[in-house]
Image (cartoon, protein in one colour):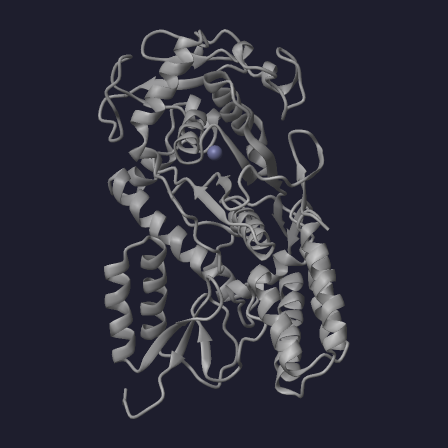
Length: 487
Ligand SMILES: [Zn+2]
């Protein structure tokens, strides 16, 4: 069975046919780094991780890009109101916008490592790609798709081929048209037109020289320019949260199609919303949970949950199904993960059995993940496998293979091991917190490709009597070293 994926643009399941199977190219809209990622963000980024893991499991090579928006404008509306979230956060904290962005970029890498996300191949920073954005605006100018005055430049959406694929509305109709244009955007010809360039207000930290005066780029042009630079005008899959489908994805696509005449992404994948106890997450409701909130547990007390527990909870739902996070649901799925790990550990310690069944189970698992990443069905196969009496090497082989997709540590040992990526189980052997902290830091450095710093940390970890072992791809295990060395 071949891999098939749901494509949001054509609104149907499509057989996956990559441009180059040895290098499937993927772009994911990354974080705006002015705060910690909440569990809804992490669920969205998990979609890319599952896609990459599934592709690799099926023998494809991958090349993944995830941008880091380090100069604000999470939503076009806020951008148009002149607010930059990175700058607003910096002002509130009395720090520079650059300091805030660097701090939360590190936090983003750390959370990715805790969630056992395979690192992207490139993490382009928006602030380092403004020349590319400027050339893209110039290409759009050449096509007659840009207008504006006073340092404001707008994209004329009537020049974009097939504009409206994601919104499904004709121009001048629908929600967007009802918004009134006020203040700085009085020059816009129609509500759907969007900002490509804005003039810098006095004292603005992030600003660049351009032929239109000193200013800064709009949000939609950022992703378009970075995707073009690293993946070219045609690549395989574009991933993001469902809230980005319109206007962000509609607009980045319009920019690339208009500037290049090429197709941009072949498949568009969108991760569904995450609610908390039935409510939308918001700062005011106090329910914007982070991994640290999960580790602290529910407010009523009781033990907390590891990133692997949360990852497993997400895996029990298809990515396109809205998820309603509840503490009860998290507790139940954490117990299920613990049972599944225990069952795999016991099975793999026994004598080899059920090798015939293993082949059928392996095919069943592969078919499930190949069916638009149906991970819930794949998990059901894993549970079925341990009930079916497979044992020894057969069980160990399946667990190892399936974990390359699931990433939850199916063979995680209760004693002796404490996994760095938050996949922690068993209280028997407590790794000192400072060793764990160094291991996490090393993982962050490694993902940021700062290898000298990562190596120095590894030496420090070894000096403390531990070592980091790359267990399965992307998962690093912290292990106490055998031998005479005393801590
Ligand atoms: Zn984007």
